[in-house]
Length: 132
Image (cartoon, rainbow, N blue to C red):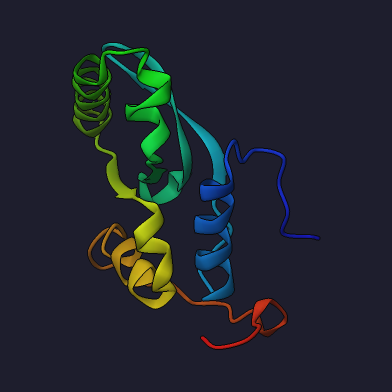
């Protein structure tokens, strides 16, 4: 419970957060604000000190929530990500399929850490259950 947060806006975001926490990454911030030339955007979760963000992309964003225009949603999402990256942030996009291999997900997240920075992984054995 101590690692819970009201900041997650979808089950997918919570699942990503669970995977990175149980494998020992530092606790990520949720709904990270990033000021850009296009305005301020919130990212699902991230580590501001690394300027690293993780976005969970559910299919619903590009289907049901697209209100009949998935191309427009995709175009706006591309512009949003480019403006965030222009500010020096790195962005990792994760989908439901990526949640099947938590170890690989953590390896991908660790690629966001700036070169030369050491990340001490803090094992959280109380979050392990079943097969890993």
